[in-house]
Image (cartoon, helix red, strand yellow):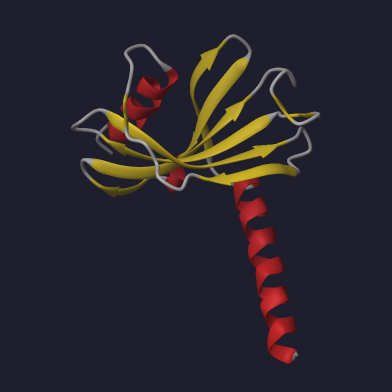
Length: 133
């Protein structure tokens, strides 16, 4: 019973840490389309050229995007990109409301590697991630 209690405490602490990390990240704006902004957590960029993983946050200007009946203000997206091949894969997508309360959490089981389109939000993010540091 004590081990089960410890497990639940551990899971609760991990959940709080994940939610806190989404809020306490070092967000930098990458691009803006209308009143929506794509930001990147500069501290999340890890890897060895040409492949990097990182976390972005899409901030909606309004609550038009919905999960069920709840308006979504933020999508926090973990991705992997290959700078040489100009591809990106989404690994997770978490949706939050305007109070940064988690609404939906999705881990992509078989991430699809897609070619980045010119002049897209993904291209702006890829350029940011792949620039020499």
